[in-house]
Length: 375
Image 1 (tube, rainbow, N blue to C red):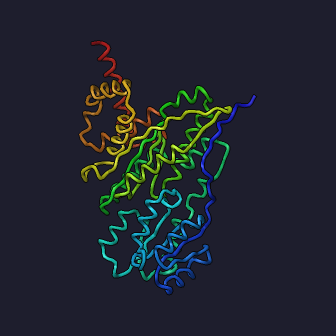
Image 2: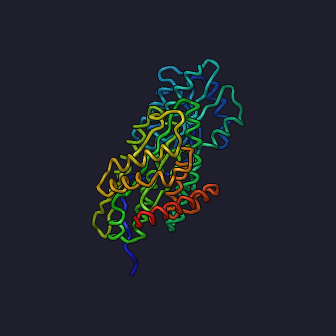
Image 3: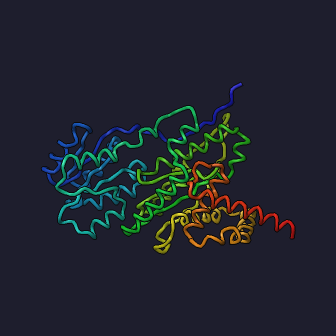
């Protein structure tokens, strides 16, 4: 007899179409840019931010916006702010490339970047400049939207390895420092995963986790990244969030809370827990691994129980004996990050340069247990 399938109810997804919105108060710029793009894309134009905002709310096929910064009625910064703060996930994660001119100040560009501009392109631009930006942002994730029967394959299409997550996160953090903005790391955990697995079976439990991962992926932009940290835990890094950090996280949690699961006609309770950390709360020398560590701690703090408290007390007791020899804070935190990959069995995610140190740590841990038991 075939196993019953978990039923998932969520909002209707729209298939992406290659349409681009150009926003500029200059008819000449609109005409020239349209001519450059129209052989490859459907082009829609607007003369100011307000007109563009109306179009975006009506046309769900637009996948990229090019917007001038200086415009009457509503300028590019105001338009970008409305897009990034929108409660509509389709809009809030929309790539926005700002068109800059000689009169745009560095302070103005910085303000737009802080709000969440995806990229910049300066006037005058040529066809190669414009097409390369369009190719970079129009539907780069079409392959992620495929529906395949194999859960493991589908997961690999939307979730990065732990090593890629760490590498991209480090680069994003460095980039945020250089541009005076910030990143956020959010940890998501299915608190009752074992209970779900007992009720619906192993494959259906994996399908629940994959659905959560897909939901997270719907909130990320091309510069963001998601990874899996264990059977029931995921992490997502949002880059260039700046002052919109809390809005981004709230939008993610609301999007996850919207999922409803059923099994054999009965609702299935899924406890989705979260904790997050923003780099703006730390000094300039903070590492990406340390931000992840704080996000994980916040996950536990938000959803504490006696077992977790006991585990952290025990961890503090032997932590220094395990990591003490490594003087670099970055090295310690990098080892902590990849030790979690060992625990979860994701061995391929561990960079080769960390293998020897991880083996050393495990040997120390075994010795610690042996010495403790002898005492």
